Image (cartoon, rainbow, N blue to C red; front, top):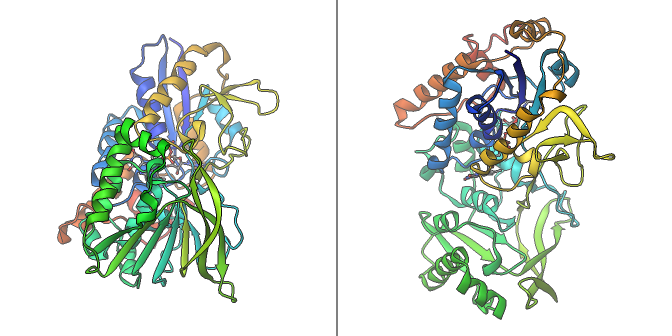
Length: 461
Ligand SMILES: Cc1cc2nc3c(=O)[nH]c(=O)nc-3n(C[C@H](O)[C@H](O)[C@H](O)COP(=O)(O)OP(=O)(O)OC[C@H]3O[C@@H](n4cnc5c(N)ncnc54)[C@H](O)[C@@H]3O)c2cc1C
């Protein structure tokens, strides 16, 4: 029977679902899958994006772990595509590759002052509070007043993590250095700014409602933002999600405030204009133009300029994919150009045989974890039907790729290694009654995964 040797690059939900769907699919050939992941631990943004105080969503890791624990997918962690292994290597050892490398960069916000000291991308901060091994261990939390730009769930995550009292995060899996860092924060006011009105936000009701449940944090709203136009009224009346969001916001408007030590302000109809310099290159204020409904469900500028004094700003205006060496890339949209997951040359639109994409790198950084499953189904259906286009590898044997990584001194981690790290993190949390405490430094993650005492370096690197 023919055998498909498939490489999948990126062990986030998209990559793991793709492997699972292929293994369960009806097909006329055998399959052997190797999953390459640049980090020593799998699960992508579920481990390193979803906020630590969202244990229900983090719990999706259990379902992904069940897939890996079946043992029919080999995982090579701590292996970076483009550095440790290349497209030519994959062609030498596999019949096809699926890229599921996601998106980890911040989309740009092109306004003056965005590069000032104290202005950050949400993705960097998220990586820090979720213990990503490749970002610094400390984060500058010196501001009393902070602006968060954006009206999606990531903006809410960032605002919540900044406003929440650190002891309320202790039952979660936040790393020790993150808890310590947050304890130093003198923050009193977090201001979230969106260009449009309350009826046009991209938050989901569940995530919004959570803000109102924060201990010792007042929700502050301005009455002027709730003078709805006809389009907004129609949206509230006809769309259940908008209706619930409106209900939550109206409830907060009526609540008594003034007792809490921290405040979370939601500002609507605010178009970013500039991050104001304090004269020494640091953030001093956020300047915006007040907008108003344009009657079509959008907004237009009013010409009224306002300023809020702040000392730090986080832009949460979207994520963006990164190019991979040797793989086509659409730099406008931050994705691998593709048709239903089949990768295309950007100029000619011709098919690149043997190369596929799935997840956020395929369709852009929008949508929930569940959406990566339907994505994977579409991509996998093409992998199955494209047998005539598969590569003909010179060394398809499973041991050959192991020999290649070892010959290059790559300290890869495997499924057994992940189990060791997982158990180690759970054991660290146990004495404190916490579900786990994440190990953050990459060397330590690799050392634990490869059953080495910490600090002795990687085995073969
Ligand atoms: C801050 C934030 C909060 C979120 N919260 C939620 C939520 O509450 N609920 C929800 O349903 N969804 C949430 N999402 C969305 C969810 O995380 C995504 O839908 C999902 O993770 C996308 O999956 P993916 O596999 O395409 O990408 P990713 O999860 O990003 O996985 C990609 C993987 O590829 C690896 N990789 C990248 N480059 C390379 C390389 N060169 N070599 C090898 N490996 C590589 C990465 O390390 C990563 O492990 C959130 C997203 C963000 C950013």
